[in-house]
Image 1 (cartoon, one colour):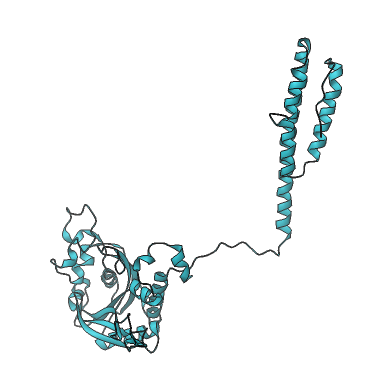
Image 2 (cartoon, one colour):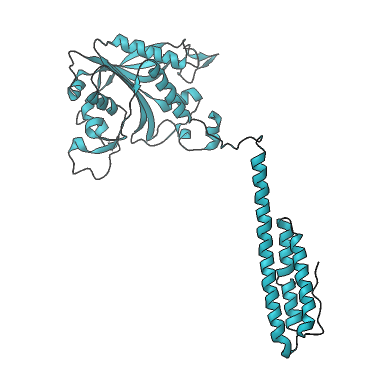
Length: 370
């Protein structure tokens, strides 16, 4: 490794030999550099501020030169400095290019290595449950319909037979958008409280027969807790045609529940009330955890509270009053509708006791379903 000699003679002829020796040593050390670590060592040897070659020639040659010779020595030192800097940069470019070329050759020639694939996630449990429900009804001949999540009062309430003084129209129950007070009541915007407005929109655009299943997000002004969320998911269905009866409703939902939960599941219909169906019924299924017996061994089943039944969805025959909003003849057509909460079904299927876990985005929780 080159070491800077002290000079006794500073004449131009005497400077030629040490300058030539230094230049030769620079070329030799540069050619010996083959990788990043050796280049860093080469760079520091020649350009380090404390004891690099450039620092040494500045101290041992320029500062030590007598005054009459400083100009000539200074010129030689500047030339050497430029050569060293250029050599260091050229060496870096050489090893960088060689490394890139070697990598390119390796990548180009080794075609046996497996490709690098980005890891893919899995369906969210709610999305998976929703897709399963929709798939059951698609297999029964239903098409899928979707609609806006920001709706008007008309589509969300009025056209679905909700009277003006119905509690659901209160801002304590429904999330209305701000700045709507100047509009007529039916045109005021809100976050839809159910996917039922899509039923009206579908019937406005399509004459019977109609068979649609409607998945989507809905919103209600509920405080989040283990069983409530201001945003949740629904799947609704609508079938309208000539001569549709309550028997068709019962048969369709019984088949759907067996497809979702197993052929041993039984269904039960209990009278209820919904503004847009008449008659209306709540649909219960036999408990899938205790087999409908109400007990798991000697213990009461906590899922059905020992009743043997789990309430799952609402349903009913479409109220003929709705047909007036879409131009259907209630004397000619009849139909049924149903709706279910996807989040509750997902929680039941996956044994989740707090709905908020679905929406917190905790990867540790979601990884269980991948």
